[in-house]
Image (cartoon, rainbow over all chains, first blue to last red; front, side, top):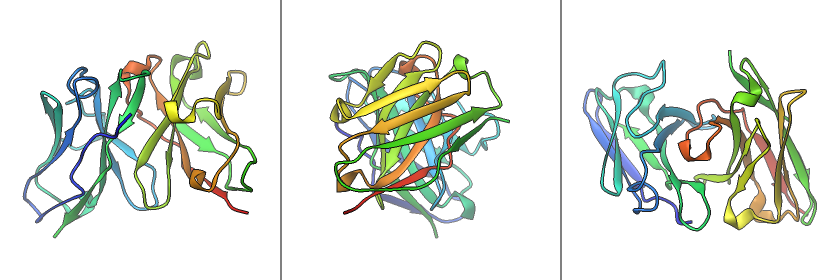
Length: 112
Length: 121
């Protein structure tokens, strides 16, 4: 299965908002409400930030929000903080060929 | 608190096999699944497969079919991932992550610390 498409990098200043897109197909992002987002700091394991398109796990800041329109999901981070600088990955269940999970290529967020 | 503790780093020669363990604690092991995700140096995340800790059902990534086997030992709340016929491009950090009992749900809420597997002659 092909990876979901994310921008390689995004940046923003402290206090600003940024949005990271994640584009798939009708067999994954567009076909199911099972899109997740993960944050990964260097040398650390990924951390779940959003699941099922727009749900936040307990303990995740409400500055993080998710949405979906058609085959594209989005992660928005408002009130950017220095500690938000990390890599972000989207993922989705996919029914293409065999049932599986597919990740996006990742987006490096830089807080200027 | 939920914890997934993985086995230590491994160095293997091309063609060999590796078996990584993932010991779970802090929750009812058989009420969840386990997925395995790997990350090659400087690269993104790659989903490898999923196993139900309830009944042992598995789903593997198509590109790894035939080389990977995932198992669980419910008596010790431990999941295992074995990868055979190792190649240099299997060099990566391997993560286990807690998943739902239904693969479709697709999200992973707790992760192990990662196990570096290096394949080199």
